[in-house]
Length: 257
Ligand code: ADP
Ligand code: MG
Ligand code: MG
Picture 1 (cartoon, protein in one colour):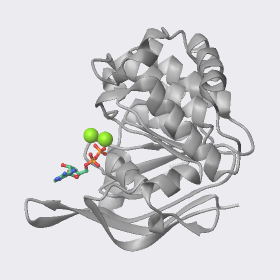
Picture 2: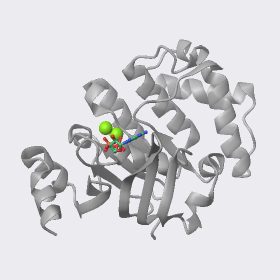
Picture 3: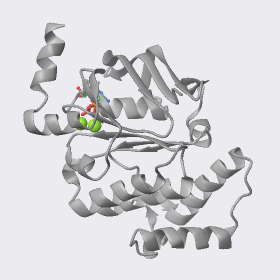
């Protein structure tokens, strides 16, 4: 039941002509139906991990493997990853000027439905489904008519992200949260979105800098990340310890190892 399995993953980015190693032999197992958190100090490579899992091309995987339900995730194109049920929400949601939010969402939903062998949603069916979700999220339908994330506030971007996630019904959701800019309201929306999807066929990786989000999403496991690797894993109590004591304990243990 190793649904998402990351083994010895190292990745680098081209930093103005110099390769810069960011992930350094990262191991992580996320079983089916579980929600795990990754916490770590700024600069530890959390966002890089989410970009590598998304297949962003500026990152080069040098060694390691990532499998999803036994399939080689790294060999898949980004759209194939989406079709396989992977949903990624980034720290900075992408703005798409000139792209209508509803059209974008319907295209994404139908691509995934086609890949799953399900019937596509026509305009009427889509509108009905999306309106049920916007209502649930207390989002104005006006936001569907706007360009994707353009001029959206931080909270609106989060709502829009949760809307996408609920519409796509992923098997694996990876959320890179920029908690610092989020008010409690937005955190709750994200947490409710994740919690509403929890079940035997839904797994999630919640990447977060603060413990606050984990007051609302109770993770099955918490992984501590530093310098491009997971240096400690434990139960939900790890998040509370981090909140009280910070990362120092783990960082010194790692330096001594
Ligand atoms: P986190 O999300 O944990 O804060 P990041 O993945 O954003 O960490 O960054 C990890 C490290 O990689 C940091 O030292 C950061 O400066 C560096 N880094 C990230 N992206 C780039 C880039 N495009 N060019 C150069 N260095 C980068
Ligand atoms: Mg950062
Ligand atoms: Mg980050």
